[in-house]
Length: 462
Image 1 (cartoon, helix red, strand yellow):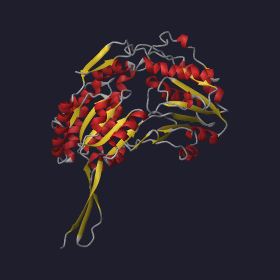
Image 2 (cartoon, one colour):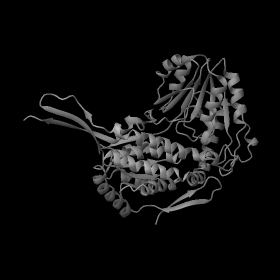
Image 3 (tube, one colour):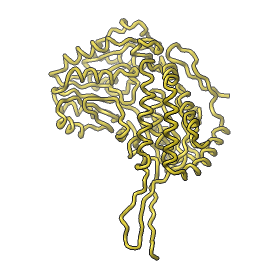
Image 4 (spheres, one colour):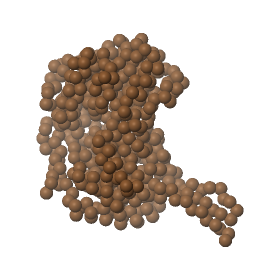
């Protein structure tokens, strides 16, 4: 029987092993989900909400255990790991709290002799495919609203974070969710692709690479089902001449290096007005030199390993190529003892003298490196921010909110921040443009992608 093995980036040890679902197990899960959903969709939304709240409480009660598992599975420093559990609770609670209003019937003014309304109906069985970098935060975006909307959910997590799927389902079992409404499957890539093609699946929510998103679209082609894709990013930040320099440095550097740079909406390129450039770089380099690269289970560690050695070597190649093309590297890797080729432990790096002919400024890095480029004005900054095949988020740092908003309207991104970055407000729609994806999750708008409208046109006086 095929096995799933989670190798911890902390020390290369085998942390979790599970069997991959067989075809009979997959078919059984589909049949069970379809049968359960037929009853679940008739459950009043208020009852679904009550179950959701109990599940969130059950999940939150295991914060320490879940944080430690995250640390070992994907390398998040233990000092930060619990933050994802709290973030899960925040997002899940918001989507549960707004469920009744977001799913309420739309009643139109009566016409003489007629009654009209639009009802939001669940799609059926949803497949949620979640990644390893923020395994709970990415999954919750789709799982909670899908369940609240009356769908059944099959959850497939990355092979790097298999326990996350199990823990989420366990929380709903504790909350007494009807059997079959929410299940997990450990699957191979091939079986995941086959599952997308199963007639029972009526919605796919995928978070991952652009190549993975293309696979989902190919597998779903011709089935006319809804697909939500959150894919890659190369998110920019722009520091205007009027920015609060210290705040801009602290915020953008944290946005670039938190989670070792392995964030969907992390900052990967920074454009700084020429009047602030030298001071910004000086402060940014000083801040990055303070990071402590170490084992994720060490409470003093502020920068953990990347998820795999291959991922770290990919970033090393980007950095080395940029330096060969004329970039200046400001951090000496030798000052971080654990950094060595072939290791998942990678020193952070700040690059200047960069330009868009370098892969490090155009290709997703997903690691602890950021390029900082000088710009002469807003026009150059916006042009460079938009010079990308991606468009997930962007950040502007400025004391002039009105001017920043005018710039934000021109930036091609799903979310534009002012004086912050790398954060999802669950009350706002989460979406991307260009190769960063399609569809929408979170906010009341997220429910629109997990339901279909059904109109009722009733002639009350025959």
